[in-house]
Image (tube, rainbow, N blue to C red):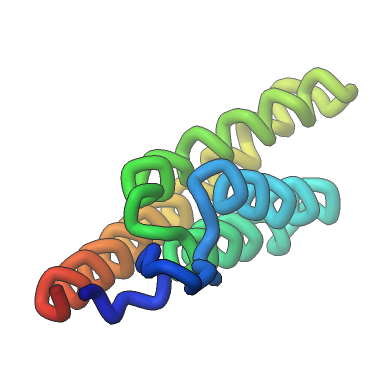
Length: 122
């Protein structure tokens, strides 16, 4: 039996999130940061994606690993469609790139740690 908190033992509910819930939560946090703009956007990318990596169930690890650049691109596209000038959005995206790279590394580390920890316990 697995002692992972998200294991599906009979009579036990998982407190971890499926892939779609982890993705929606991260999108909501990043969208709020994009709406606030400035320094909130890179912080929201890091916060939303790392929280998703911490709260997602094991079957959602691939989605969690792929989401930082996808969510960032989607939020920037929506902001352009809602009326933000394209050049301003591109400048904000280029300024966000170092934070995005660090967020991707942090998500990989969190997922690798959780996968390794889960493998030891099973």
